[in-house]
Length: 99
Length: 219
Image 1 (cartoon, helix red, strand yellow):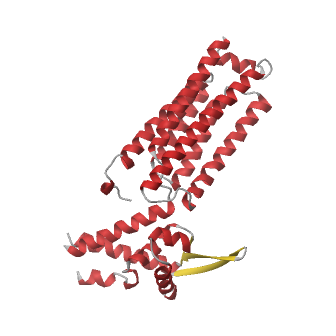
Image 2 (cartoon, rainbow over the protein chains, first blue to last red):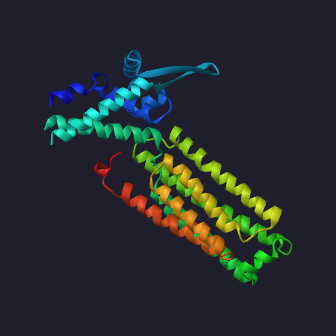
Image 3 (cartoon, rainbow over the protein chains, first blue to last red):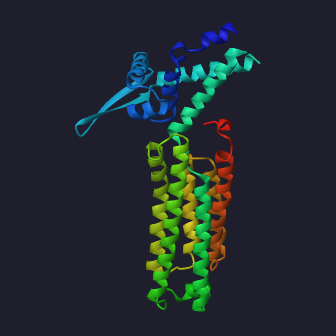
């Protein structure tokens, strides 16, 4: 049991980070506003979780200019996808073995 | 065990966000049901008009394009336009209503993606049918062709919305292919494909996603 819990990635333990990664797993890229609406969080809260994931290099950031406005989009990196899949697998095993 | 339910909850949440961020799930089954009824009414109006003209649909196929007067075209166009407008506006109405009830907006990235992927095969089919009609005068093949292309469009779009759309698409394709073998039953084909199939799948979607109590829904 202990073994399974160790395999869970601490970086994904937060609900918002889990949400960000989930959205980026199934979309090539997602912009800030869409993430905000999807997860129903405040700007500051979302930004801090994004930068945490960015620091770990689980997600990549792209800034574009549309007219005068900047549009920031995010995508999951190879490492991020790998780690997220490991985390999911660990969750699954945990559930299966606790029956 | 407490942590187990927690982990299950996490998995459900992941699934939920994946679905919501990649698929347009506000599509209401009632849209399909109403589109189906309008299609049946449109087909009935066309059938009555043809009867009154006193020649069969098969005969029309032979006469096209020279011997058919402008009134016939005006009627066809008006019938199709009214049916489509009614079906679309009721579709948008029910879908907006469902989106609002679930606390979502109707117009977002998933809606755009769904529309683009629907419109590419659909517009291709539309242009192709117009070419068949005006360049070659192949009147009889138009109805089965529209069903095949509509089916392909739905099949393509189904990746971005509810799974039932995939099966609706496949059904339309099969119906269209069968229709190619029996030229002359275009109105019947349209009534089945746009009418009855829409009603059946609309009802299935309505029962699966809307008629259930809210807490049972997984999104």
